[in-house]
Image (cartoon, rainbow, N blue to C red; front, side):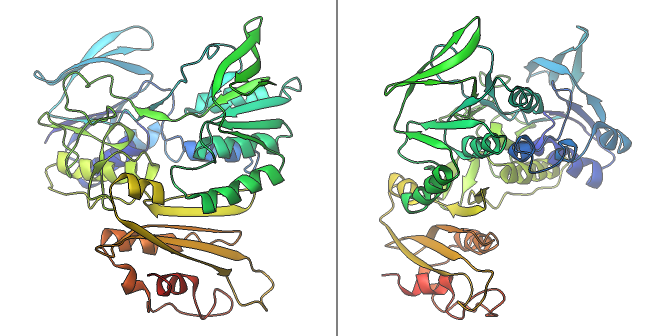
Length: 444
């Protein structure tokens, strides 16, 4: 039996804890987290803030009692001050100020990520808000309930920024979305897709300010009142900061080998450079099958998988990660976009001789009433013909299709293999000349 200490109780930490408790009940498990809650589904924040769901309660998918019933010891609202990796001791301070120490045989770091604060004046003003923790969403929601908050600025047009802009607009506020890039969602999608999303945003009343760099947040009596960019000044009663996230490596950065962005460097068993110390989720690296190398992709699904791998290895069962593709999706005002692997910009940056093929058509035959256009782009390496990425968009739910491309990247499938792929046809679902095969057939 081993004593396994987990630091961090969100997606990755919970997956690791459940793996150990369910499959290796003889181990002693201690979970430490500085928050007052665990398992908050942050990607559901916008759904609650935008009142697309009735309550936030179901955004917590487990609780302290559930883990304690399995035999774990939980230390919530407890800060980890330091770790002695040589002596295998974790030093903590509880909410009441009491200090303690916890020995371990195996340690799993699941400390997640921290929001990036833009290097501008005024981020300390009242009504300037990150959206990461459940408490952050509570503060933002309370502010939106105030009738004096009419103008809201969202800084950052990535997934969280776009989702929050939609949510706030659904609450009847004037919303401006700012980003230094030329479009929204540029990390995951090519302009052929992001231009459509930008139109969806503006058609629904969100004012987009791309290619603008925020220079300062301005306020009166300690509260934000406006925002200044390199192109103008705009009223803002509330500012949501969604610039991005960085790995939370504060506990081990001076002892554990790190990646170029500061994430703990781990192998396929989630092991760090220190024996018996594992790192999972947003604080750790991950292996990309598209790049065929170690990288950093902060997604909840990746966190869960890494937690499962670490849980088995920490308990004595060798298990390697099979790598990831970075599969993701977003739905804004009924417009759905999904992607996996690399977009064109990322593929070119990685040095691939990249090509792509694309197709656009109705999801179903024209005589079907419930229908909509689908756009698809498949990106592949010109030399090996290996599929590197795919993007799809529609008002229809085409999300399941991206899973096939995720597996294709993992298994190094070539674009030519998809040309005559056996895809079923039924008018209720699709067309006989399917957009996936049609796109593949038009590849050079």
